[in-house]
Image (cartoon, rainbow, N blue to C red; front, side):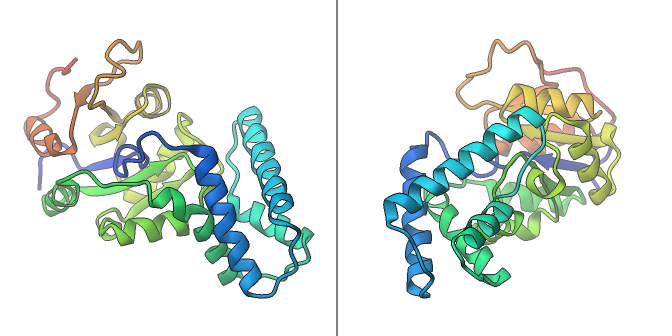
Length: 253
């Protein structure tokens, strides 16, 4: 066992999976092309690609805007089901999930896993720490799990909470508490690693976790939302955990 720290929860995008700067419109169009081809190959009735693309873009934009206003997350699975029904498609649940993957695949192709990530997670799990993910996303959990499995990370992160599945987004305390309950972790003995000051650091702090900011390029050097610790690379985590062997150390600001 590692001592005082009993578990570590991670943000997903640009913490475990690095997406960098993404051409959002280009990725969306590529996803539209893949999903359109998937439906076409199975004989489903479709409008022209431009009409299909426009309809899907409007639906996702409206859902994102509504989510921001209500502060509640939506699931793209529900969106896919609704738009498919309106086009007269009788998709099975398996087809809905595969269609969701087609939409996500171009973004997946942009992702990288930093060197040493698998080894770090394996090391931490080997110390008896419970590991998991808390992510703000409208991408279905089944799709993200598939991506994590392809990267060899899924089995190392047994407690996974995606905002689209629970309805709450970081920095809400509720999504952190759901993750803590699933992992059977006390907040004061749990680290949370994220890359954004407000949802990750402020949210984790409000929920009672120990917040760690991953900031390789010091983009948030002057943030007013102060983390307990800062790291540039996940490979710093084992050493940081060891600092807690005798209890919480002084803040590393």
